[in-house]
Image (tube, rainbow, N blue to C red; front, side):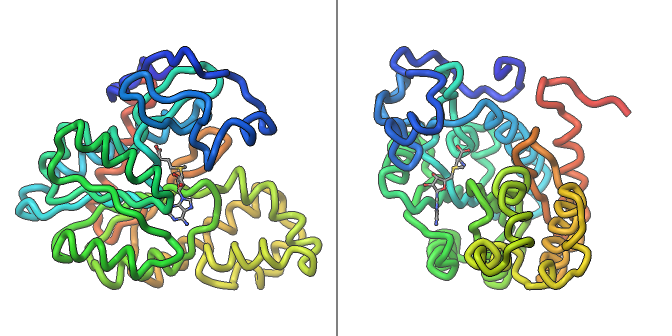
Length: 313
Ligand SMILES: C[S@@+](CC[C@H](N)C(=O)[O-])C[C@H]1O[C@@H](n2cnc3c(N)ncnc32)[C@H](O)[C@@H]1O
């Protein structure tokens, strides 16, 4: 499947991958999703164990990144920055097939358009992940890229680091890639408030985390306060839970109401243009921009289908 994408993800078979580890086995053979059974054949550094659909996310992100960077570099006089929060170590391994490939961060660093950036900054709270990614960045000789330890629950610290590294000027494309709905909306709010010119792409765990937990949370709120608080923090508002429609809504309608609540919060911090790009049955990539050009670029990027075929209209 990955071979058909136009983006070079440097795929290669890892002979030590156990393949097809189930959930229980994965708990045994990974530490924070880094495999403890094998390392990368490419550079002997850690790899992150992932499902096959990770490649689709990379495809959409990198297509957009290239179009955005090329389209904006002159307008912003070279002051464009790429920021990734939840960067991972830069190299993933497909748990089904045992093929390893570049993650989002390394794909960005190796992309031609990276040279147009003022800075590419990558944040992850795991120190091993950050030092691994820095080794890969150094091996790639990309002087404008850097990985830093940063926790998305501490948005101001991440923002301080971004401002120190970029002087706080220019245009920012910020990709946030968590595994569930744990990122607080205050992260987006603080980034937008302090950096001003920011477009977001957010991994929105609507068909995993949300689907699994929302019905029980609505039906038995007393025993699901943690989940409810997590979603309220993610949405940056309580409105979803005050909507009487959620009591009887179907799963599909609940997802629509949840997306709508997210859009409402994005509008409150200054966004006007949105899109939700579903990645199979797992998550959406939410795109948010306050500039019409942003959504034009996003649509253009998404016309390049995952299998490399341009969509026909
Ligand atoms: C889905 S993975 C990232 C994958 C990567 N973007 C890619 O596609 O190659 C999520 C990452 O979030 C990191 N993470 C988890 N909790 C975090 C937190 N509170 N702050 C920052 N990073 C966190 C994990 O260490 C993990 O590397």
